Length: 371
Length: 88
Image (cartoon, rainbow over all chains, first blue to last red; front, side, top):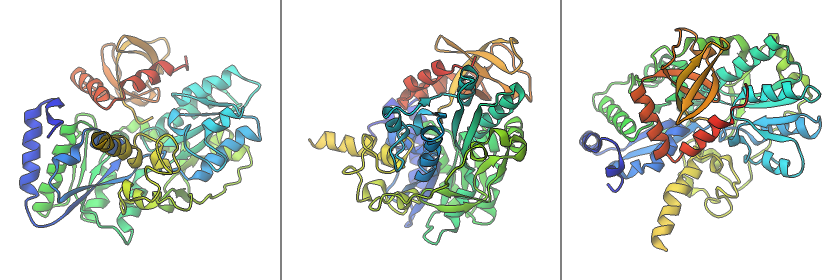
């Protein structure tokens, strides 16, 4: 209970913890997956697992966009800069993701023109400032960031910026959840639904999880109290044999999502027939690409892209960790060959990756207390 | 990239798709095309992702979000992101 005093509203936290203990007081295991990487980070950072009874287990899901990006996409994207002289732009999270020929940051050190941007609009601006160069924006993220890429592409067309294109890696969360639910080693009881993604897509897309798969799903905020309350709501559903989509984060997430954002996505993007996810393999209808009408701004149409599929390093077990079959520390490379300083797999790169979160908040803390 | 930065709108109108927001005394322009369903006003609070206002929130929620970023150790990163917006 060491952290509770630091939280806002400690009395409410205590109440939620007590409610969870009461609801979980039956001889069975409760396996709950938090889909979103932001939740994974918060759970580790706040040490929330220590507040849960041993039979309530949190499984960390696929909702970290950097973590599910296959290595081949980094290689293909970087090739646009290495072989075609384009300026490669991406969010900071992407910079340390290892490709077969090194991460974008490693390529930058070798003199390749790789630049961090904080918004896709920054990449567009860069293209306007360098009319003699081509600027590629390496787009990544779930539905939280896809609308901003869509608006940027629309803006490029409106302004007639011809030396700008998007290397699109946007993925959609529902097919990943479906793949996990249909996987033969699936042993989950319920889901903590993503927060920011749901501000865009709303709560309706999760209906299949409760209707078809009978898994209670609670869309949840990022405060410690949000997470604990959502876990209590899930346990209550399970104990009452209900399976419903509930919205614990209604103060930010509208039930129907953000119409302007959904319209922008639908205008600019269409679904790819299939896309490779790290750890989950090829999933059909799970990712976005630019529509024909915006083909001029699609890096994959403007440049030859090899589309190579690169296997993960042999000994790494990113896939098993990503599906919740293994805990981060159960991977053979964890903390030895693979650390946040020298990541082998993408789960160790982002602060939202379960391996990096576990390493920083559990493993290092334990090491500090024992040494 | 997944940070949600709370900001208060302090200026509108220079261009229809932009608003100036203030976060902890730092001012930057953000895109407001994704909140076009209802008109925004000066003084409104929004959550910002990668240079775009994505949702409307209350002032109290904005305070909560700032505190949450601090608790998560992401406040410096959030300000770095905000100060990094260079598109206008």
